[in-house]
Length: 318
Ligand code: NCD
Image (tube, rainbow, N blue to C red; front, side, top):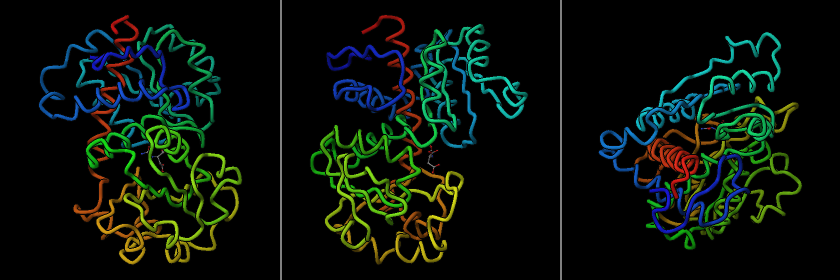
């Protein structure tokens, strides 16, 4: 299955979109698509990870990403262990590398890591024998979120990425989702824009390969998709916006601002949402325009695809 269209997926880890070429991405998206069919998820594929152990190691809180990996691993028949870092020896002063050595001794096959420091999963990957998946590292990358977003778009636009103009809006500066998505959507041929106040757009963003806008009206003009991001208050040291109310006034997505985009434009958000801050509830909950629930559903299938591909690569199945 991992070579479903003739290209062998041979990567050991999933750490950064920058590590992949387009054929790797196409292989992963095809596998994710295979698992989108609920009957496939629930019935026949239990043996793919049978006998393998997946360890979820989350140093930051997470609801959907951790559960999504847990479900994906279980549906493929893996033994899944969730390491509750708050109760582990990490809190007692153990270093990341001691944790790696301890985990390595338990012989997991796949380690899913979320950490507040950029580069932590990559560092771990050099110290353990198993495959490592980056489930979000600081402000750096969140490659599985970008992959599930791409699969959601592939479904919504029948695979025509080249025809998609997408605006990623809000707190770009603190967002690993934005960093992974810009790289991946560019690779797939989308027209990518970044929209936000100057304080929340990194000064080097013009070199990311996306056009930068500071107001929603011009930024959303002609867009097929509007991807909203949360204000990542926990990563801000200092005041980046005057107030949440004022932020919503200028950058929060409501019907009026969505009206600047193409008629029928679709809305995405990786979650968790701050309703009334970056997005209004009537937009988020409107099934005709919001892809937010699909993103969560697609997330499980996409992660099943990623786990399958890494497992096959471990076993030399190409
Ligand atoms: C994102 C994250 O953790 O980076 N959420 C997620 O994975 N679903 C975005 C966020 O926290 O705002």
